[in-house]
Image 1: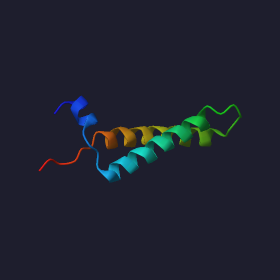
Image 2 (image 1 turned 180 degrees about the vertical axis):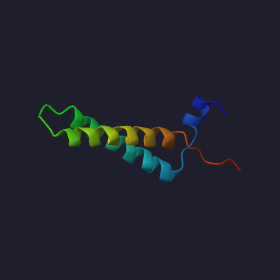
Image 3 (image 1 turned 60 degrees about the vertical axis):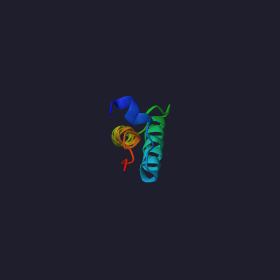
Length: 69
């Protein structure tokens, strides 16, 4: 199964929820990183890590498929 077929296959409910949470975390942390106000370096660093983790969770969740029986 190639990557395009896998991405367009049905995704289990749990991984759909996990994907949405991951993408929301990535969006919120991106907004924090690009905020026009001065924030402490620790907040920016943590937001960067959360953005990466959310993006990875979203990508992996999208590629998870239901088992064909």
